[in-house]
Figure 1 (tube, rainbow, N blue to C red):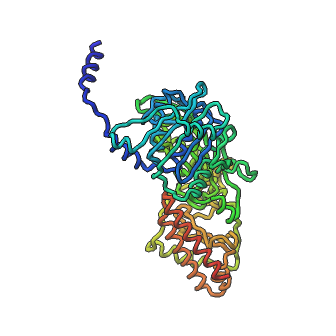
Figure 2 (figure 1 turned 90 degrees about the horizontal axis):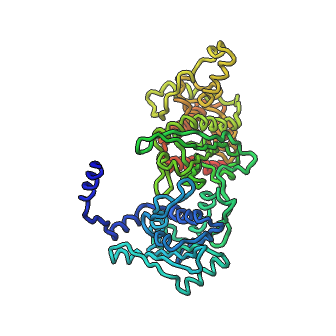
Length: 521
């Protein structure tokens, strides 16, 4: 009793009104860095939560409209719809919404004026709620207009929803926040985003952009018979919430190796560095794509794709922000998933590499370049790599002394670290000949431990002209090896977790290879 009185007295002292400055707050919210496609997907989330079976997006120069045939809103829900931090109760484990901020913040990041027209399944009246940012700024107060729709708005509602018994239309006008000014390009962008982000819902919901039906885009290519599902498992994850209470839930992780496609197919389907990694799904809705934790992105993992799926009761553990476009996992959760998945990702990368055709080229001897580079490695600028476990470099003769079962177990543990026993502890570089096609790059490079692996593409005109045609000129072949080694180490030296930097380097090598192919052909 005494404690309750003390708490009441403490709270009574907080009696000064502390309302935010509406005009300043609005300006801040409009500049949150909300991407247009993320904002519109947040609005679509509300349509899905309203049990819509058809959702249409209309984009033109005058306005953007999101139309759904869901259950519509009651008047109290409509009043909350454009309110920051709405009081609408959501189903914790099923709702796509979060914090009650989606529609309000998403709409104001794009438009100065937002109107919601809605007809509830239990009502014959079309109601509207309008927020005009300019009015809010002038009044310096959060205000909206909630009235019955006028005749023009009723005609629009009937035209778009036809004979539907209920539904909602969100109208965005004065769209100053649109980044892509070409409406055709913006429509195409939204089509591709919706196709991937909401793919898990397309078995029961139809999506349209400017009356064109959106087809599902599965980044894992599971409908392709050549896609190899490496694993599809549920993992029990434990963590402590912000109150220190231990929680646990299930995370599903699916990992696949994409089909081995031609360069042209890979380019068309965007099987590249920016798109490799995981698609993160919250309540079956994608909130992040190309997520590649624990391992730096590299060409070796272009064919790796995965899905990490969880329910919204794990939002705190997964670090989901209110815009639902990224995650920042708790350390304990990150460590658990890393333990389960990192080695599997490496295995998939190795499987991809092993499917490249290795060529035994007796005509060309790259040993001279390897020897000189090894000799001068202490004064060369070389890429850094994590130290590999000592057992990775175990001599072959020691392996043979072990039992067959022990060897099998060790092989499984180290399969991601050993590539045909070619690694040696003090080897600086290893040149390998591969057949990557005439349209492939001149070379590919990656690190295996501290060893730089250079994969010469013997099909490229550059190799034919400067290496194969000069088998008798060892000095020239060695000099060309030096050139490629220098380019490769420069490439690997600046590789990081930055997708943009990796993509730029990848494009540089690709453009160089393409131009050399044209010039030498």
